[in-house]
Image (tube, rainbow, N blue to C red; front, top):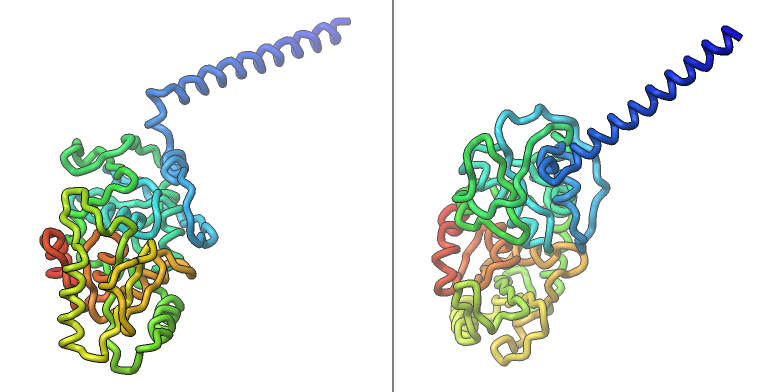
Length: 321
């Protein structure tokens, strides 16, 4: 009977300890998930949140990077959102902000995976490398004016490009080195145009879906601009000129008619082919933000930029060409 009593006491004690443990666990679980504590979670939590966007495109298998030492200061990173142009802009903006603020740059692993399918030179580490570090991150910071200092992090909003800072990133062309298999595919596409020959001078023109409209503080080019540019190029290059017009929508205008004009849909299959083709052109005609800018930047050749946009593109021409 004494032994039985001892066993019952032990059982009661164990049950009591389990109950206390559950209560303590529930209490701390509540504390750790209060709204005012969400920003103090580990970087891995933030990375999952930053990657919480549906994205079209080819995604390579995600590989977990080796862990890195936790930064002693804040970091700069960005949301994963948008198509190739937006992802390139976010990546470049992270680099630019890092160089300006001296913060360490990191990108969400989903962004790195998306871009690394096309580019082989990416050097910015992923947030997964510091996923176990406790670094508070703000909801979003649009520009450097909102930044509070070296101990604080910067999270760039989705679809926001720190374009004023991007020209100061001198190694962008190395970061965005196009993989050989895509270069081969791009050259094959250019050679498929009937007017092509060994002496062809390819002219890349990108037209967004709303190319006849204006907005965002820019005056966008109309048909007169393109007609003048194409006429001048034809005079200079003669039969060697081949105009490659990449458009998001069908273009119905006499400006882009002729045996030397070839159309190609934007966001072509395979992934990134529109950018690759633009980057391989001998002359880039830039009138809009978008994939055309990146094509001109990566081509490192002649650029013809339109009016008010020319002032914004000029630093890129000075640095990259």
